[in-house]
Image (tube, rainbow, N blue to C red; front, side, top):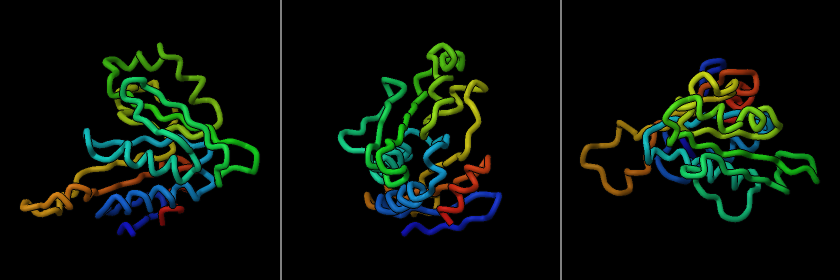
Length: 181
């Protein structure tokens, strides 16, 4: 289980020692009813584990089949027909965005994402800073970094260790933060 602490109104901070910790974090987020209409940003360097977190979250929400990174497509839509987060018979719509390849924030506007962000469902955004001020209200920021506490003589097993910070920016984000508590 990932070690971490939550502070009301401030955020959650902890460490993931393994991919199983990432999966447990994702499962706690997925268990919150607030996840069904939220916008989460995922920050961290290349290889930090943003897409791994998204895959675990999508699986916990009931997405089946192949889950691929939207690095080249910019957005990958998903639908969870049997999501435990939704009433029976109602699918959960999810959009996974990756703005890494944006060279100018206006590309967000040109791509027509305003309607997707206004629609019901979960939006997961990697590299949000590349959308600039065009990105709508974000409910929670999740920052993932390699764990600085890992010794310099690290082994391959230490490569999965991460320091994670989740910050609630809205009431929806606060409800998600409570699920991490």
